[in-house]
Image (cartoon, rainbow, N blue to C red; front, top):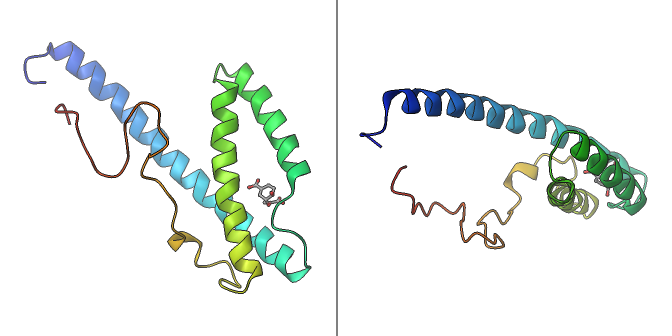
Length: 134
Ligand SMILES: C=C(O[C@@H]1C=C(C(=O)O)C=C[C@H]1O)C(=O)O
C-alpha cells in the first residue's frame, strides 16, 4: 500500500471515510429498529399474538424489493438482508414470549451466527483476516 500514488491514496481515504460514516449510520438505524421491534415483541407476548407475521413480512419484502430496484440496489440482496434481520427479530420475540427475556432487554446478547459461514465468497467475519492490505 505504501507505493501507491498519493492521489489514489487520497481518493481511497475519502471514500473509506464515507463508508465508515455509512456503516455507523446503519448500526444506529438498526439499533433504533430493534428498539421498536422489542416493543412489538413485548406487546405480542402480552396479547398472545404469534412472534412471526408472514403476511406483514411479504408486504415488507415486496415494498423493499421495489425500493431497491428504484435505488439501483439488487432486490434479491435487499430481500436477503431484510429476511436476515426479521429472522433475528422473530428469535427475540420467541424469547420474550417464552419468558426467557420478558422485557426484551437481553436481545443484544442473543447468539447470532455472524461467522459468515454461509458466504459464497469464502470470506468470514470471524476475525480471520487474509487480506494483507489490512
Ligand atoms: C416486528 C414484527 O414482528 C416480526 C418481525 C418483523 C420485522 O422485523 O419487520 C415483521 C413481521 C413479524 O414477522 C411485526 O409483526 O411487526
